Length: 288
Image 1 (spheres, rainbow, N blue to C red):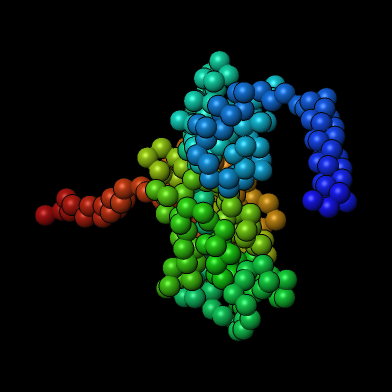
Image 2: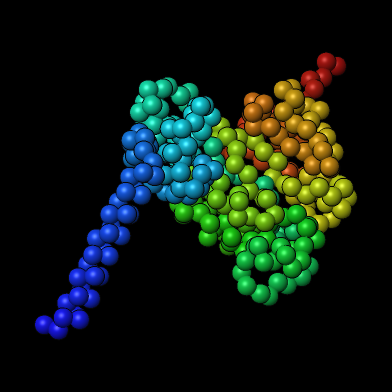
C-alpha cells in the first residue's frame, strides 16, 4: 500500500476519534436533564399538533404543563377533559372539568340577506381578499366565504354551504381548537361554550355600522337597538359600537332576547321547536 495513503487514512481516523471524544465531552457537560413526565404527558395527548392550546404542538404543551406552576389554567381543546384528567394524574393533581366549547359562525349574511355589489376574481383566499378590498357586499364586516377556515381545520369540522355561502360547523367533529377562528381575517368565527345539550344563544353578526347603514347592507344585521339588552334578566347582553354581544358566561339561554330582536340577528341553536302562540279566546257575549 502506498505509505502516503496509509498515513492519510491514519491521520483522518485519529482526527475523527479526537473530534468524537470532544463532542462526547461537550454533550455530557452541557446536556439538559429532561423531566420524564413530559414524555408521559405527551403520550396521553391526542397528537394533533394543532396549536389550539397556544403552544407549538403537543410536545410544547406537555413541556409547559409539567413545568407550570398553575397547570389547571392550561387546557387541550382537542383532548378535552379526558386528556387533561390523564395529564393531571401523571402530575399527581386533580383538575376541574371545563365546559365543552365549539366554533360559532357570527354571520348570517347569505346572498338572500346580503346582496353582492362587486365581483372578486382572484385567488380563493379570504386573507388575500381582505387585504384588497372590504368585501363583495355592502357589509365590510361579514364573511367572505372563500374557505380559509375550511382549509385551516384539521378535523374536517367546517365547510362552506352552497346556498348561503357561509361556513357551517359540524358540532360532532369540532374540537374548538380555534384554527378556523385564527384563519378568518374578518374574525367572524368565535369559540364559545357549547352549552347544556348543545343549546346556545348568540348574536350572529359583527357589523358595527349604525343601524340604518347595517340594515341596508344586510337584512340579518344587528342594528344595535338595545331591545335585547333591556329584556335580558341576567345582564348577559351589552351593546357597544352599535353591536349587541351575548356573554356565554352569563347567558342562561332563556331566549327572551331572541323573540325581541327585530332583525333576527340573535340565533338559538339546538332548542326544541317553540310552541305556537295560542290565539286569544273569543269574547263571550253576555247579552241575550
